[in-house]
Length: 211
Image (cartoon, rainbow, N blue to C red; front, side, top):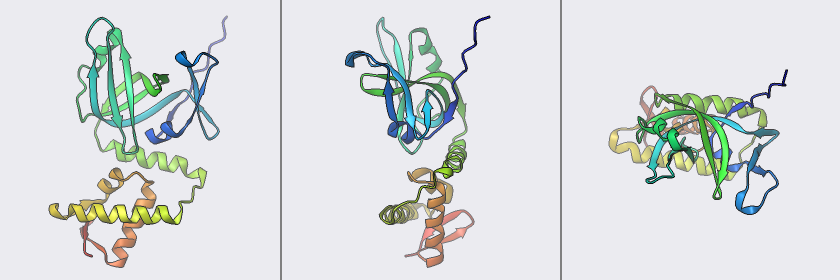
């Protein structure tokens, strides 16, 4: 009986983590490089599980059919590609849809992309759930942000709250989703602004600028 090949783990990651990973290729010529795996910390990643919003959709014309979706999860963007008859899988997907995608990492024309195995629509609120879930999983790294990073994050939070005054404030969850930083760090900076009187809560979960 032939030995069954173990299926690779589909890691839950942020798009920015994929883009930062070290791309390891099989031995081949430069014009036809084949991705072996993505090295991220002590992990060798072949399959991934990501969530994001569709910000672009493209379908080719002619005999060599292919289509792409560009996903954005608030940390970065990556494309999903399908070919031939698989193009029909994108037919009911529109700009702004929130998708869960499980697939295999591929590399072509100097670009990392995803060849999807599963594509499923979700409520956009699941993006926040996923961001919090990933942050919890990454805590083992014990990453300590630098002072200048915290300062920049604080300024970004303040600017976002200020801009939102024209619509009478902004929800904390929206701040967390819009800023490319760990949710816990963002929450800490919001709390500091509330304690310092720079911002206030007109109602639980919503923040306004006080100055």
